[in-house]
Length: 185
Image 1 (cartoon, one colour):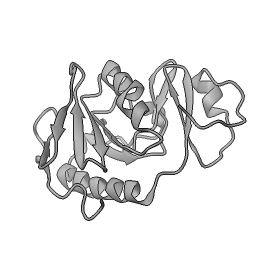
Image 2 (cartoon, rainbow, N blue to C red):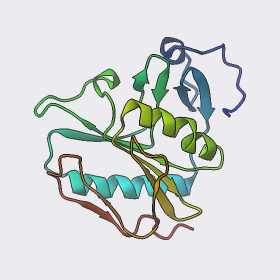
Image 3 (cartoon, rainbow, N blue to C red):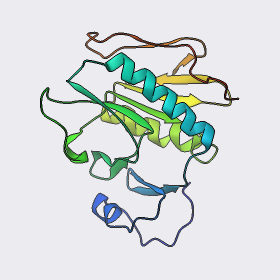
């Protein structure tokens, strides 16, 4: 459920993008407009730590790009998402210039918060799987684990110690996360 807000009905990406900037995160999930507030400090600390780890793992690769939200990633005619972190393919030597150039992420990561947990595990997971996102990670700070989902999965792989990841082509260094949650409780 999104936060109640005085927004006009929004059912298309065009309507969503026409909304005035309000500092909140707006997404369209299979035609449903959802709005979430700014994330908590622990949430952002984990985003930072994951960003740094992914940057190291992807260093020297010119065929992928790593981003954080806010971002407008279109996954269908009525689906625009803003993953916390995501990795996408790109053409070497050609910078991405617009969110419309990004396509389907290779990796999408969401850090759970109380207001987004049900949506991240439900609607958003199904959206990412249906769109063909190679891996979707749901980072649960309270349980101190990561749920790893792939497109054909009916159940996630639960990672609570060492997370290992490499790009589907296997050409990059493997990312090994052991301190994913740092000192956050």
